[in-house]
Amino acid sequence: MSLSGQIKRWRGVIPVLILGALALWVDWGRMYSIARQADPAWLGVAFLINAVTILLQGVRWRMLLASDGGNWPWGRILRLHVKATFFDIFTPGRMGSDAVRLAAAAPEKRHHVAASLVAMRLQGLAAILLTLMAALLLTQSQKLASALGSWGAWALWLLAVAGLSGGVWFLLRMLRMAERWSEPEGWRGRIAEHGARFGDALRDVGRNRRVLLQSGLVALLFVVIACGVYWAAGRGFGVPLTWSDCLLGVPAIMIAIVLPITVHGRGFAELTALTLWSGPAAAPEAILLTCLGVYAIQLSQSALGGLGWTPGKSMSA
Image 1 (cartoon, rainbow, N blue to C red):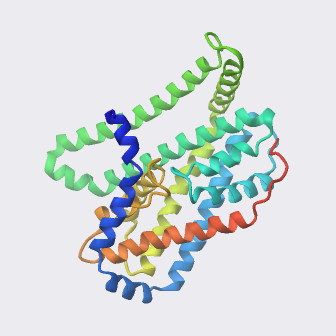
Image 2: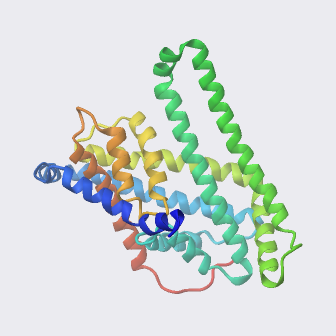
Image 3: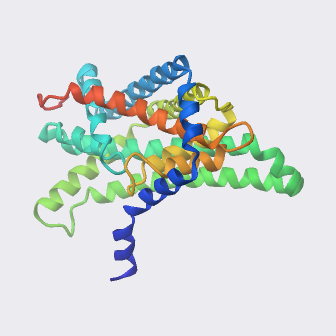
């Protein structure tokens, strides 16, 4: 078997191995004691904040859908978004909700919906990386400046600007590629037709700079508010997370959650949190409970969306 085949074979085992190692490493008695002393009021705050993040994601998706000028009903779009989150519970990389939203689209709008979801994913990743970069510069710039000297600090800022510029260049490059995808030369039959229509839809989304800017700001707001979920849950389990801790750790956890080799980031999210947040003031067991508590909140709200799931009319403008 080739190396790539072996990686594909074992990639699903990696999260299980990580969770198993963590289960053997933690003090279960201490973990139970911390769980019994949890503050339900702070966990309730985390529950409410997480509900806001779900609403924001639905608003952002509707904004990207409306880039074609269509009258996409707010109520129907938000209801479908909330219901679709149920399918993220058991799908790798949280791809289940995207598949459900695409399946619910009317046939004549399916290419535009697919383009909006691709744009939403790329935009979300850009917002996560931008938040992480800003947090690193704000919290670590003084330490790095003292270690590198004044010239090193300037070099660090230039590197950050170059990285941000590179991200913008990559996004523009993707939009130019979409224009080429809209040309069916060299394709045959239905593949050419669908490729051209999807390329046109992605190009239309990219051309509406006002919508991209507005939805991009909502994406940044979503990341910041998502940090508040972990901040409040940490308070509930006695983990004194600062906003700097959250702005550094939560974006990294969010990247772990969307890895396609794990379901909802389990294993990788906990390992990331322990790596970034462990210290004298925070017991590893409390950090694990914080991650699991946020996961339980997300599961409960996704399950509530699933309870309202019924096959309905196709989504259309």
